[in-house]
Amino acid sequence: MNKACIILFTVLFSVLLGAQEQHSDKSGRLNGADKIIGLESRLIRGKKVGIVTNHTARLQSGEHIVDVLHKSGICTVTAIFGPEHGWRGDAAAGDKIEHGVDTETGIPVYSLYGKISKPDKKMLSNVDVLLFDIQDIGARFYTYISTLFKVMEAAAENRIPFIVLDRPNPLSGNLVEGPLLKKEYTSFVGIAPIPVVHGMTVGELASFFQGQKLIKDANQLDLTVVPTDWNRNEYFPDYGQVWINPSPNIRNFDAALVYPGTCLFEATNLSEGRGTDAPFLKIGAPFIQADELAKELTAMQIPGLRFAAVNFTPVADQFSAPNPKHKNVKCGGVEIVVTDYKIVQPFRTGLLMLAAVWKLYPSKLDIKSAWLSKLTGTDVTEQLLKQGIEGTEIANRFMADSEEFTLIRKKYLLY
Image (cartoon, rainbow, N blue to C red; front, side, top):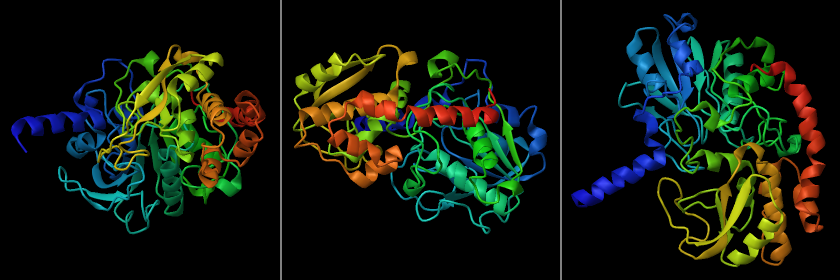
């Protein structure tokens, strides 16, 4: 490989990981991680600390919390626990990750995505207190909150204090959409009875999981949430912090915003944009006529969004799309353009898009029933689609669930 190719490869790799990690945050806002090394350092001073984290755990300075704690003298970091995509954030969706040692610090690293999703007693044998610091994006099937749930159980079982270093929900704290997860569809992409869009921070969710006694031994858990500086009316663009890709295919706020809807296409034979320059913002398949689908969706006048007809060809990428659907095959479809993020209803939009594809291509749309049920948390969605019920009506059927949850969650809100 010549020098030019090596440089290009390095640049592309940095983009995929969200190379903003070296950039300091000029917003003036403090997250829980900033506070634990400052005013709240008393919580970990002199302790042996295990930390559940990934590449998103940056301080205002741009430094990673593990590096700062390791050098600080405040505590001794004795274990790192990584979620899906690995603690460095460079593993593809679904990749199983092995245990290892961090080359920079020599700290043992344990994977919580693969054979093991919860730390065992041996992994925690040298830990006095557990920290959790991962940026979530506010969707039930984004697996970081499932890791949160499992680690909370481990902390409770082993009587280890658990501290959540909170960060904002980029989709705001007021957007709540979708059905409550039915118990029979519990999985790692649906760990608790919450809507698809829950409108809570990980700190609030931790309080909810404990308060509702969803985790085992909930009464034994010593939980502390170190809050972030955030107003729940704010979306990511409003608070001006540096965007770090939370996973390889969520490359900007717009992708995070539509993800709770377009992720539903994972359960179909349509590409959800993996292997393109705009994952989750491009949707299509070889059998779709781009202009036809764009016209259908445009006629729906979906709030806050515009749909542009596009043709694209998914290609493999070892970091973000090792084997994308319709690899190297030209697809017709749409690209979603966000025009007003504050009025977007992503889950409803996903249902409308699914209904539009079913209407136009009923004999060609293939739905993986079990996966769609896990993603939506119910088997009702596919039934209604195949009855020809309009997407708006399907979404309306779930409004009672989201309204119920909005009432239940009130006592756990911190902002």
